[in-house]
Amino acid sequence: MTRIISVANQKGGVGKTTTAINLSSALASYGKKVLLIDFDSQGNSTRGFGFDITSLAYTVYDACIKEADINAIIRRTNCKGVDIVPSNLRLANLEAYMQSHGVVTPFAVLADALSHLKRDYDFIVIDCPPSLGILSLNALVVSTSVIIPIQCEFFAMEAVASMLSTVNRIQNNYNPALKIEGFLMTMYDSKASLCNEIVSQVRSLFDENTFVTMIPRNVSLPEASAHGQSVIDYRPSSSGAVAYLALAREVLEHEKE
Image (cartoon, rainbow, N blue to C red; front, side, top):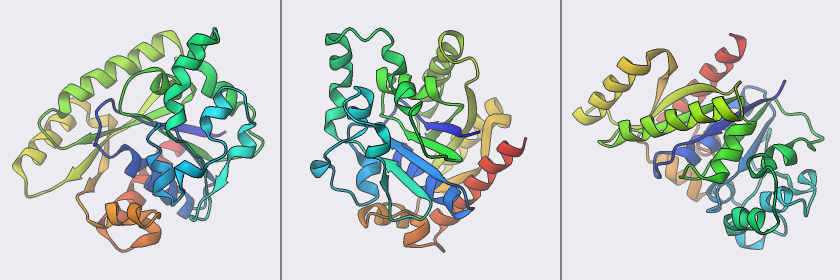
């Protein structure tokens, strides 16, 4: 059974796209077949794998409005075992399109598009936008679980509270099977007292739902994206690559459980 994992947080700059790209690559390195869905109109996951988002003939937007078959939109990435459904700025028009065309179930257009997949994947990873609007709602409705990246900074706990409220609403109204895969501490610096304080707060409140793995601040992560690669392919010995491989192992352990 395919596991569908959203990477979501309404706060921007917390490492959602970095996590979506590198978790996908790490899972593939363990022999899993992975489909990454870029569900953010900024198209950063698409660009992070080296695609020019301005030259895409079709994107996830076209699949959602039924203008194109999702199977024809899927592109192979430069990472073995990882395919991608790309995105660009056109996705920002999806909510307006659904309103103007009277779509009856606007929260389920992504689920409908994915129901037509002809290829088998072990994991589908969805990179969500930095908001809790209709795009994130669609992602969470179709997901089996959600990873919530938390940057080690002052306002982190406010973002956690908002995400928990949203997950609870999705569980009650749309997707009772949705689970929290885990809270993921990102941009961790062991020498920064605030980082350690935030980690301590999160673990004290959500110990069972917090990944053991923490993603460090590591220059190889943005460098890899700039080169259109995952960090595992770009610099496999870096602390960022080691961390995402460890995260993938935890996700795979959850699968066994």
